[in-house]
Length: 109
Image 1: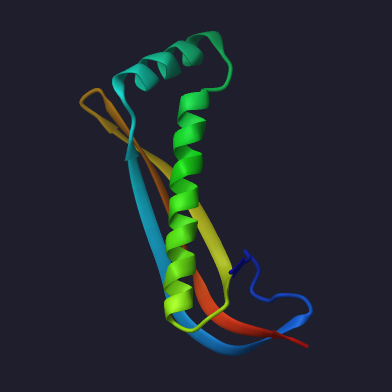
Image 2: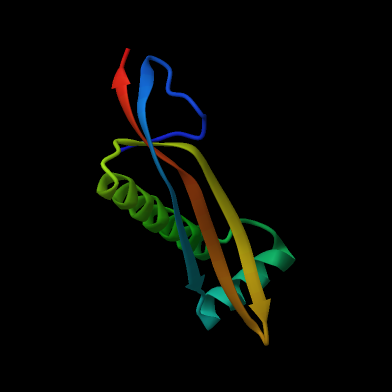
């Protein structure tokens, strides 16, 4: 499945437009990740645990979008947009990743 952020695919023409495809993932973080992320906030550096959670969520939603496009008889998704966010409160943090795009059928020119 071809996934692109642009509205065209160079060297290909769009033969058919399919539906909007979208997926969301909200991933909980555990108490240890939250604790070590807070330590990283103070001392600086990257939080490998949060990065791994975001990467897992991104892979999950891209797989879901690909499956939706394939089910619609398409072989690509154009205009792909991925958004990241954090939902926190009551001492808990949830990471959110959402993506959407347009499923299309492309063929070489």
